[in-house]
Length: 268
Image (cartoon, rainbow, N blue to C red; front, side, top):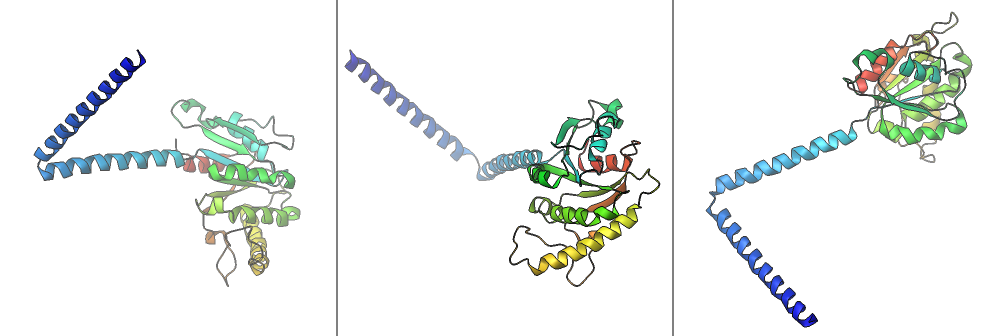
């Protein structure tokens, strides 16, 4: 009985081979009957369509909607996160020990819900021991918001400059030219420094940092990129990516410049 079914299987396989060969012969005859110009045109159309579909697929994969909020601890990042999400700073009074993360329509755009692309906002803790978490989110970032406390800026100028320097020289930021918003927060306070003053001081500090770090760059390979133009004072305009300076108040909800930056980099 087994031999019988084995023979039957062999017969079916042979019949299938014959049928396949007939189909191949018919396809070959059909192709040979097509004029070369038409054949080449058809092949060109198919290839062009495949390439276009591949480009569209790759573009969709690389388009990000992630905005990363970072900066020193106490700069007000969490206030800003909840203002963006809820239009309120009610949950922004405690220093974050874990990233706050959420995908939502900006609170100011609630009336357009369903028509706009949600923004994925990540508030990364500013404590020095927790900063490595930043590396988890930078590769997906469409934009980085570096938050500075405008009131307590001077005593924190050096550490803020060091942290910002690290971000601006990271390969994940430089290669993709991720835009960075230098956001001077708490400008509603009388003792707050101006955005222009903060920008100039940070540029001066980063100029000192890049000079000292360039001197040991051969030994220190943690950063793949350097900042500025040799022989010239450093300015943010010399960065590989775009760096913008703006003001905000997470406490009062004046975050229009932050929202503008987000929507420029996460299209509706």
